[in-house]
Length: 271
Ligand SMILES: NC(=O)c1ccc[n+]([C@@H]2O[C@H](COP(=O)([O-])OP(=O)(O)OC[C@H]3O[C@@H](n4cnc5c(N)ncnc54)[C@H](O)[C@@H]3O)[C@@H](O)[C@H]2O)c1
Image (tube, rainbow, N blue to C red; front, side):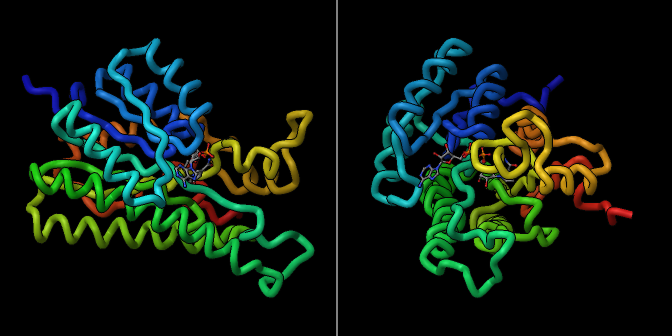
């Protein structure tokens, strides 16, 4: 019997592969015999991550690559095609927030730093668009492929303070739907574009916002837990199953969705 969940030998490119969520799915995919290519903006972190990943499975490559540098992304894509002859999966995990694009407790929207708002918008939106165009073209050339974008719970619910992050992740969700439609209409159903919307997972960027040095929750962390029916933060590994499903042939009729992975945060009224 054919196992439609089989992802072995799929060539999976992960932007932000040196980060917490990108690095976790890289390990999972290698353990499931996929060929993994991680892109990272920092050479030292890239080498450290490659060292860990290559112990799981030797089928791993890494490239220093700024996702906003289209020329560099194209060179990296060509290198991957030269090595494997194809790209099957793109996970757009590079992204995040910047302090200046956030409204502090004692500030209002009028204190927003426009330059930082632009930077965070650029990273999340264009940092998803550019790899999708470059690797999406390689997928279009062979007629099959799958893109998974990293959206956010901040798209469904208004989360105070993180205005630039929220607006740009909403744009990522819209881009997901738009590209899903475009690929299906013009290249057939072989190329699918979906997104995941993680709730609160402790990462490098939000750790200090949610957890104090002594391990207790900050006031904001307590509010998140109060509004999460499962009463805990997510673990990075808890994204693996949904991503596996989305990139496997079992999801062959699924495109343009944004899957919440949030312990119920999105559906809870708080009452
Ligand atoms: N952690 C969470 O709770 C959470 C929730 C929802 C969505 N997300 C999203 O998931 C993704 C991964 O988050 P994470 O928690 O692993 O964050 P992380 O900071 O650990 O990883 C993000 C990665 O993106 C890379 N990056 C940043 N700018 C880049 C650039 N210009 N070019 C290439 N790489 C660049 C960073 O080097 C880092 O490795 C992000 O898009 C984030 O917004 C995270």
